[in-house]
Length: 271
Ligand code: NAP
Image (cartoon, rainbow, N blue to C red; front, side):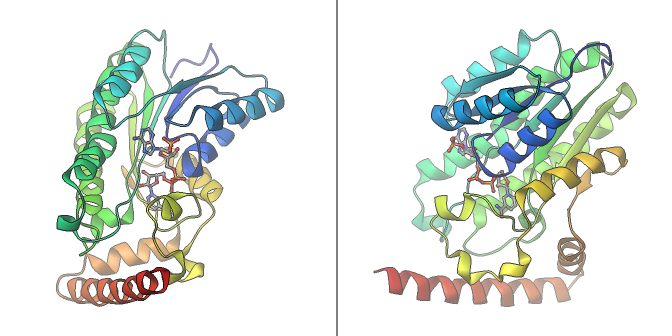
């Protein structure tokens, strides 16, 4: 990484939740920032807060990453940068319910935001990072990558893509100073469950971490050689258990049934 200039980070999904938490923590470390998401007013407010608190430059780049124009705008911005030290592919959303009950439009949007965008932005960022001898790419996946579940088909599949993409990309680039992390958090507090209209109460509160804690642990874990990083002992235990042959699948089925039952009750109450 270039140590003579102020480091620069581009964060997608920076208008709330984990993306905003990454922005605050990197700002506190003296990083200049480019903040990407659709909601301009949220990005403007966060940029104003950070500029007031720290001596850094913050640019906003409002873009819809589910469409060609938005992705292309961010790619082009990356290509003209003289340097980029951190690319944080964090933008994402959930879809509640069975695969066939969701429109194909929403399914395709998820593929764009969770898979095509991170790949295209990494492809745009890597030449510059390699030229400067280093850089960090964090791809925000989820423990859902290891827990395929009914009612969460496309989400689990796209998050699984990010894990495999990160592992393979790290193999190609580790000897050139590039650090790739597939961040696989469990539940944490953000707008995520509100946006997908999920019943947050169906998930035990003690399973949720603060978003700041997830961002802090992710950045600290960049020192490790591992590509996949799951913050929190409990989440690490969940991933370990569900990957056990036989037992893991049985537990997953039980958990998925429980969530589906609570969700049905929730929808009945809302109607
Ligand atoms: P959040 O508060 O809802 O934030 C999601 C961010 O993604 C927002 O800034 C949103 O901004 C942006 N975004 C969504 N669709 C977009 C689009 N089409 N174009 C551009 N930006 C878009 O949720 P979060 O929990 O912080 O989510 C961050 C990441 O963590 C996601 O990838 C999510 O899958 C992952 N994750 C979350 C949890 C959890 O329990 N919360 C657990 C594991 C993994 P705009 O709406 O302004 O566009």
